[in-house]
Amino acid sequence: MTDREFSFGRLALAALGSATLVLALTTAVVALVRPGPGIGLLIVAVGVALAITVMGIVSTRMTRRGLGEGSDGPHERP
Image (cartoon, rainbow, N blue to C red; front, side, top):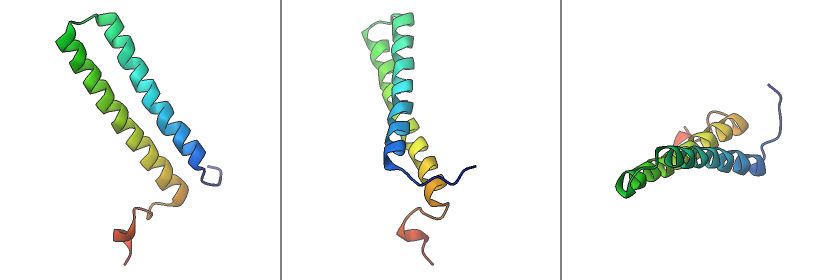
């Protein structure tokens, strides 16, 4: 791995890009399945929840990789 400086811009683009990808896949599923209103709402709600989850996972992994494993916050101090 290369030692690049931590970039908040790169973090924001990666997190938003991953959420955008999940939402695009959700849109494709709704377009292909063509569900009724109730099922469509359920599919979209799951897609939004997955987008938020993926955004959190990507940002946590990038932050830990960029700032080190022990950078979880003040509760990690001895």
